[in-house]
Amino acid sequence: MTTSHRLRIGITAAAAIAVLGWLGCSRDQSEPTAPHNEQVSPARSALQQDLGAAIAAKDRHAVQLLKTKGVAGVAVGRTGDGRAAVVILTTASGIAGLPANLDGIPVVVQVTGAIVALPLQAPDAATRGRGLVKPSGEFAHPVPIGVSTSNVTANTAGCATGTIAARVTDGAHVYALSVNHIYALTNSAAANSAVVQPGLLDDDCVLGGIARVRDPDGPNDASDVIGTLASFQTIAFCSDPTTCPNTIDAAIALSSTANLGKATPSNGYGTPSSTTAAASIGQVLEKYGRTSALTTGKVAAIDGTVMVDYGGGNIAEFVHQIVITSGGFSKAGDSGSLVVAVDGLHPVGLLFAGSKNVTIANPIDDVLAAGGVASFSLTVDGS
Image 1 (cartoon, helix red, strand yellow):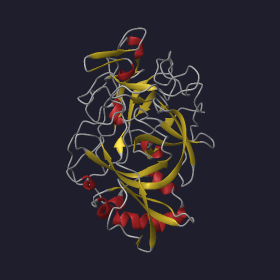
Image 2 (tube, rainbow, N blue to C red; image 1 turned 120 degrees about the horizontal axis):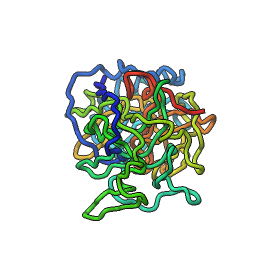
Image 3 (cartoon, rainbow, N blue to C red; image 1 turned 180 degrees about the vertical axis):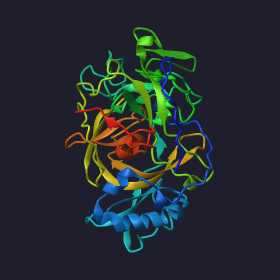
Image 4 (cartoon, rainbow, N blue to C red; image 1 turned 45 degrees about the vertical axis):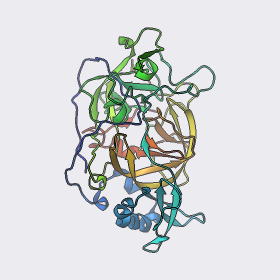
């Protein structure tokens, strides 16, 4: 298992918020880890029972398949006629040497393109949003979930900006949940650094000598701070990514009910349920995020092992991931969005990566469990 890096909760709110970004800072961690079939995942126990043989076949062959040039991931899904299948995700069509079946389980090949972390590092076109509500804008406190956020600090890749997933709680405190590569700047942010709303790219990010100031009360104003970085799960990068698998890309910032609300803006899905749900193939999902606002997609595969590009040659392997289809489900800047089931608004995943036609999310139960994003267990502070 990867090593958790725990930041103790502080009291100041200096100046930092993390932004969803295509690039990440690297930390080479070459500690030995358990084989894939020994990974502990709270979410895995809830998988559909008839997929057991396909999961076992995927586990046995994943490492070798991922060493094939052009293979971006391996997951478990279904054939067109509903049979359990091993799904191979590829960066392009026509990858030679891929099997038609594995241990008697049919193989489905899906061309996804390269899978990358989804921070927003550069100016983008106008964000979506019905009416006058734009998730990239500045909101009065308590700010809603699903909107622009970042660490107050820029990194070498730029002004990473992403999305507030949800308000979560340990029963005594509330926290803003997002992803490591936004709030913790891919393992590199200072303990207790401030997180803000809106994120840097939507406030005072300077790119090419041009300041993009949109905040009417001034850049980095104290009123933009919604919390301080409290904890994150370290992302492991190794020369051979298959030797140090990750489960989640997540971080939390200590906040308050005065600074952070628990519902999306009025053009979103509303308040998520406090009861989580496991992903299932074919399940219809939605999310509200900084760049593409409210979108709908469907679970294409589960228990995925995927290679995620954080930029600068830094590749990280993630196991037990949810693969969501619909090309428009996410864009750069949506990293950190909470993925919920349309039926009941039960939290299902934490969006952190994607490609031209798939989105990748961590199972939310793995994020919230003790030892996930924090040493203590969390729940979504919802309805």
